[in-house]
Amino acid sequence: MDSKLTEAKRQWSRDGRLLTGTVGDPARDRLPPGQTLTTGFPVLDLGAQPEVGPERFRLDIDGAVRHPLSLRWDALMALPQTEMVSDIHCVTQWSRFDNHWRGVAATTILEAVRPLSDAPYVILHGYDGYMTNIRLDQFASSDVILAYSWQGAALTAEHGGPLRLIVPRLYLWKSAKWLRRIEISVADRSGFWERNGYHNNADPWLEERYDEVEAT
Image 1 (spheres, one colour):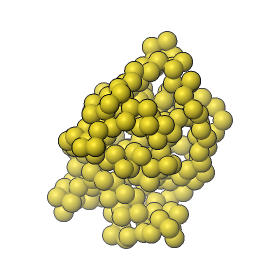
Image 2 (cartoon, one colour):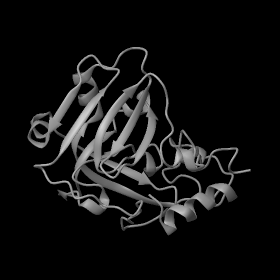
Image 3 (cartoon, one colour):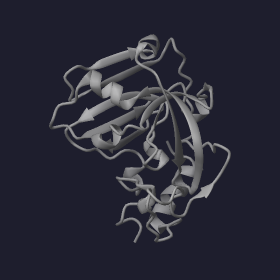
Image 4 (cartoon, helix red, strand yellow):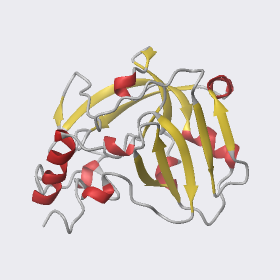
């Protein structure tokens, strides 16, 4: 998973780069501190873009749940579908407003699997080996979507297709691409970027780009 970009972003966390020291208010400030608007959709990955066709696709939702699921593409498409419009914010300081997504709401998945009451974490796994972590209450937000369509077209591999998570209220590295597994967990586990100096919570309006120890 090493690339020039990966090493550069590790160095940013060690240096505390891109930090402005400003705290924003999501109720008032649509653009978080330190961010710049773009009309494009920059591609940032770990050097691999797995091609996962419908015939190979499988999404497992398991861990500390009452009813684990293993969904092939047709089964995913048979779930209730939804459309959402949201903004996205990358830790590398770009933001894009008004992204149109189509997919399955995270709340639909949770209603189906029924997490256990003592499992407050979600560990996300991608087909490229990527892993990241969020809290269950963040995953359960009404604006979180398992997206397979962006701006009216199928989500391409470079942007995480066929399926990626979108968590609009967190920096985009928490929105795992090429989604393969959603693991509901009793214990928190740091993912790839979290182990490399990036903040565990990743709130853009608090500018939680880096772990406090790494950024000093």
